[in-house]
Length: 387
Image (cartoon, rainbow, N blue to C red; front, side, top):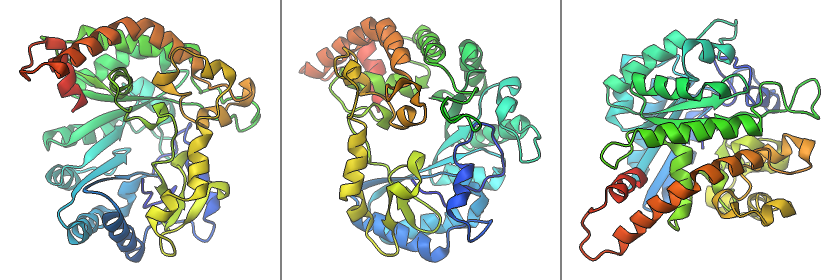
């Protein structure tokens, strides 16, 4: 994960956790990755990876770098890639996306995560510009441009205490707009006035549990001829755990630490949720990425996720979530380390488990078949769903 513009952003979202990271880089008010750092990053990434590598460009807002920067990214990947398969992801608020941007992203098959929190009244609650102006209309225009240029767009929706009661409205909105790939991200941050509690906008476990249950039912109702017509990342990830595959979502892994974050100046941190001095691994101008990724500090960081309270270790759903994201335990200390979304996970699993078991049984039966034919509609759905 790369932050080429550091914590800089042209929005001032009320729930953003990354804007405050500017304090780590006081040497300048403007943070931009230099061409030299970029080349070192790409060269190391290509030389030290396997045959396939994925790079996610995130922020802040990465499009502040300008389109020419990303043209250099592609050129360097082609220069050093030597036949490797390179996947680029771009997470953006969409404000700077125009026709030229959309055409470029489509041509080079970037996977774009577009931050759009739903209809206007939900989106503009927190996603405002620096001078507190709404951003929804501009983001919608960008979304349409991306879809017109056949860009793979994943609608990224932050779920707060305000938006959690609107599951159906959000789901139907994304469908109507053509966003068939959805990612719902539960938001929890510490209150700035009283850091001993979560901020008021943080979604509660009960709210998030009810939200995902409703999303699951809507997703299931939309099956057509045995195939899902929408894709929800959390649901897809959970299904992996039912068929013996590792969940692609890091929050559901037994341990974490496989997504180091490279800042604009080449500093490398354990995770973008832990960009802080304690978890700084080094700098790519002085050390190798692969060495930092496999360092004792990064190993220790990854193992934090498995340090769970007894309640989690004896939970029947442990293999499907492994306690969720580490940051949700350290940023919401009221339960002394108990995962904030423990209850929501249990609510969801108790509701969805019978369906997952049936879908998994069908999938496994077909996998064991000798003909290789897709004779079962449910298996057909999930073969496509799992990619």
